[in-house]
Structures are given as structure tokens and as C-alpha cells.
Image 1: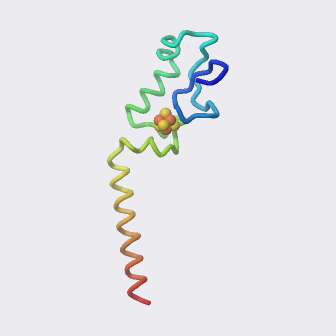
Image 2 (image 1 turned 45 degrees about the vertical axis):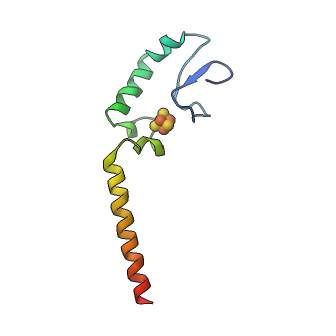
Image 3 (image 1 turned 135 degrees about the vertical axis):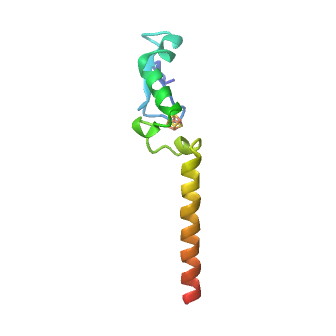
Length: 89
Ligand code: SF4
């Protein structure tokens, strides 16, 4: 929550990109249950975070095992390439 009552969905959202409402205008439960907040939660649960303003957040992929797998595979390829380069020297 910001100093002026604006609520963000994210604790790291200092610019309030994920602003969901304002406590000056609505109660916390009204904000929690508003259309904007529900749509964000729905997209995150459906693993469609890339379609939201969470796009690019490192935490977005914490819950997606396929992304971690892809990163691991990429790391293996890079390490293999580095070993090949070292052998050529
Ligand atoms: S996915 Fe990232 S940007 Fe979105 S609410 Fe979570 S921590 Fe914040």
C-alpha cells in the first residue's frame, strides 16, 4: 500500500504498475474482489502471467517447472560449449 492509500498487487511494485485500487475510495475486501484483481489472479493461476504487468518478473517463473527445465538445458549447452572452447586452446 502506498502513502496515499493506493493498493498494489505486488510488494515490489514501487511504481504502482499493478495498482488494484485505493483505500480512499474502497474497502480492502472490495479491492481484493474487484474485477481488476480477479483478472490478475486468474491469469497468474492459469500461468498466463506474460499477459499481465507481471511480465518479465523473475518470480513469475518460480512456479513454472517447464521454464526452469529450459533454463537448465540452456545452461548445459553453454557449459558444453565452454568446455569445447577450453579444449581447443
Ligand atoms: S509475479 Fe512478480 S510482479 Fe507479479 S505480483 Fe508476483 S512478484 Fe509481483
